Image (tube, rainbow, N blue to C red; front, top):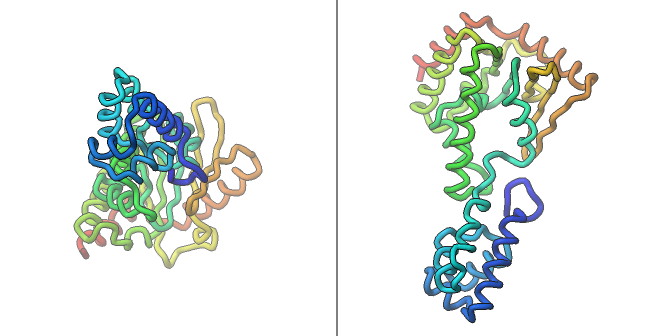
Length: 270
């Protein structure tokens, strides 16, 4: 089932139904199609009913057996996994237009700062498990988002709670490479990386992560995310409250140079 949705994607159901109609019209049974493509009867049934994403190989075999002349194979383009969680898609659209972005993260390295190995570990360890295609698409999409940091006219500020640096995502080697990456990105003139030590934490810092965004059109947004949920706010009152909290958090955080030394000491301690 599609992550974050109550039912499978419409594209799965439509393609599965077309697969069934072509198969029946050609007089091909599910058993025959499954045997030729190397799938069990129940797997073919699940794909036809849209409960499972129709496999590329099955579509290619069905296209040939049913004489669809490329009509079934053409569905592949619409069956690619969603690159982002459904609840985060609006935020990603706003993020792409950012001229100013300020982020606070509590337990994980922000997506815009993650190395490929760190991102792949996080996405690959998703519960319930994701298929390989979805993992690949989401890792690729996360890395592509990071091109935003190269927009020299945009300003990016990241405050990372110390706990995120202690979370051994992928093990010590992955974390060491991740923290060195933080130091490298923090040298960009339009990016600041700050650490909020656990002993400095204001109560506002314990309420969870948040992101503040301003677009080129001077639209203000705030985004907060939890398990399987995400909310993008444009309401001025809500943004004001979250901006005040972020300001308090940032005041408690170490400066950029002191933060770099803090991260370096952690790398050396691994």
